Image (cartoon, rainbow, N blue to C red; front, side, top):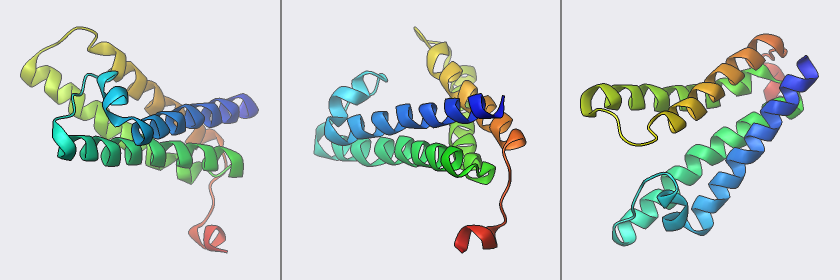
Length: 132
């Protein structure tokens, strides 16, 4: 079970890393897939920076945490996707639904559940051990 969960976390991290690369290479096209439109150079720059960092950091932490069997690294993507889910939930209550609103929320909720499950099953490392 632990090996399968580790592999799923690693592959999920790889998916997020590929998403980060797509935002880095072609931010306008990648953002359209999420329903975001770039407005001018500042918009493209913001999409390139923010989406690349969000998915890149999440992906690297997932892959590194799975590779090193370090569950503590999985708390970073859990917090990132948890905050996104909470923001979408708030927006759903304030603005209402839109076509396909559930798809990104399911993606984020699955990430949070996967990261928390892996965090419980994989070993934890002390910060001193990580620095060494």
